Image (cartoon, rainbow, N blue to C red; front, side, top):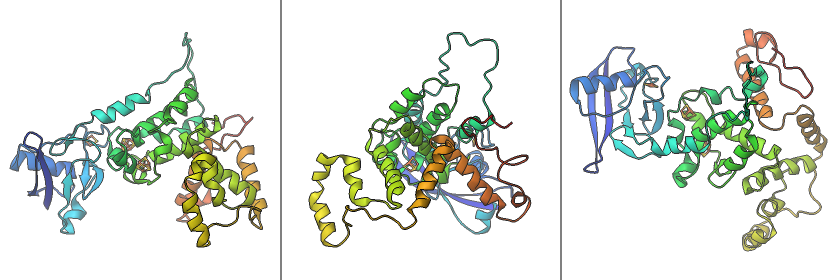
Length: 363
Ligand code: SF4
Ligand code: SF4
Ligand code: FES
């Protein structure tokens, strides 16, 4: 098949960028990486990009295709070529470009190091037996363990674009991998550190990292798990944590989001006073419901029962998010009415049963 590509070339020495077009004859099974190899071998040996495994394992070949981060060795070119498309290939975002499609990964690794990506078992003597972790507990960090450090999520992160010091999705997903590991004894210290400025509460929840991660790590979900664990441990002085807590209190007490009280509950009375002019404008246009007495939903009992259930079943914290993922996964995969629909969401041949307080983990 004939494959045409436009590639943004960059010469760091001269500081020059240029969009070049190439056309190659490639086998039908060729990936984007294969096509780049052909360009380099046959047309232009000066083209620079990273690669190693060619099978979505090493994380080296992250780059952008038509503005969205991809692993070059994962993208099949057949349908793109058949449609007559000429994709534009460029270096990943949010990292300095060294040459052509090669970025400097130093800032990426600096953030990974900052979350202390190693187990802190807190044991002076590791003993001679294994430290076995139940399947339910490992389920909580299963997705985070799949990360191959490609940087595709970081490339697309809006918060990192606004604040280059933001720890970012890859590092925070790595942090969750250790926060959720029951063998780790530094959970509180980790959560305190990740909750500081440039940490978990600075994520804008745009979900681009989930969308672009080629391995299904879902870093935004990992950040949500960190937030849930932080609140569970009482590490909630950040405005983001207060904001999240108010949502829960508000839903529990009235079944609604009590927006009028959201700002003072999140920012404190003193800071909220600065927003008075804005609030008066909203009031004038009938956008601010009177806070007292709070409007209580007719079926508020349902919201309260849900709140109680979450607590009874120990569904607060990261375990609750992992359990919800399983239930949603079941719904999604059972959609076809086939084999998955015939079996329950938990049990033999299906998802692991939720881990409840006082229960023995199910093997
Ligand atoms: S959800 Fe958060 S971490 Fe993920 S890309 Fe958006 S801002 Fe970045
Ligand atoms: S979370 Fe996904 S996109 Fe981000 S570095 Fe890991 S594998 Fe790559
Ligand atoms: S070359 Fe290893 S992930 Fe693409």
